Amino acid sequence: MAILVIAEHDNRTLKGATFNTVAAATQMGGEIHLLVAGSNCKAVAVTAASLDGVSKVLLADDLAYEHQLAENISKLVTELGKDYSHIVAPATTSGKNFLPRVAALLDVAQISDITAVEAENRFQRPIYAGNAIATVESLDPIKVITVRGTAFDPVETKGSAEISEISISHDAKLSSFIGEVMAESDRPELTAAEVIISGGRGMGNGENFALLETVADKLGAAVGASRAAVDAGFVPNDMQVGQTGKIVAPELYIAVGISGAIQHLAGMKDSKVIVAINKDEEAPIFTVADYGLVADLFDVMPELQEKL
Image 1 (tube, rainbow, N blue to C red):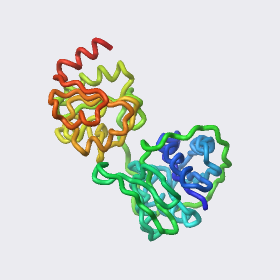
Image 2: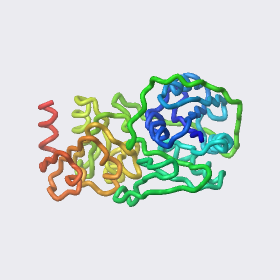
Image 3: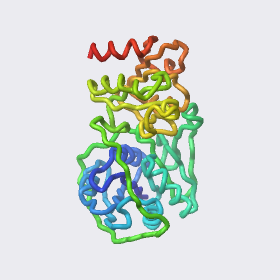
Image 4: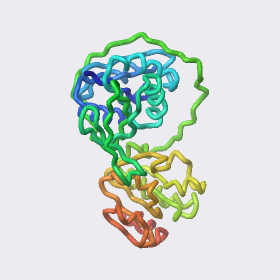
């Protein structure tokens, strides 16, 4: 039995979600092969070869995979995946895009967003926005799985796997890459940050997020937001933390003016330490907070900045 893990990368660097996904795969039992599909991505394969638990890196370096278009990647993974017992990818935007196509092409069920491995064919995953945990057992010959990275500690980089280049090119010609607009920031990316400070509807408007940004700069933190703040137009949606946003689990999460709707809690309740600041003492956010401060954020944030 061998397991195929799909690497998440940007052709230059291997993304942290891959480290967590490999950790999950090691608990499934079996040899682990890591697929790096992209263009001019040899550096990614070299990093991938150092991940503990990986015995082989498959490098598919082709223009067809430069932007990881789901239609192309899914055909590649399907062709390779027929020889594996498990196909595993991070539960990121990319993984959620191509892996369901792989499951459909292989005519098997997908198991999404697992948070624990009980056996090679039995897994735990959250349902009802994380309010319950389902134990799922698969009898399919090939298990197609996405992994919630925040539930697994990343593997270390002490390995030395072999790199095997494969010459398989799949251009489905069903889509094409037009362009991308990257959000530029000196702060850490949300899913990789060790400290996150997020604002909710209580911030009142987008301009007031400057109160969070000044504190974030002192803490070296990323700035996030609740869905309510995003839907109100306070901040762009790439800042959204929650079930339909980004799932995070930093060392420290500071929730400011966030009531704590189920959708938001599902995205951050695995944080190591949670601090909540809200003037409503009945706010649900206090049920998951390690530290709670019932106060007006417009009084607290300037004082916190001064103290820091």
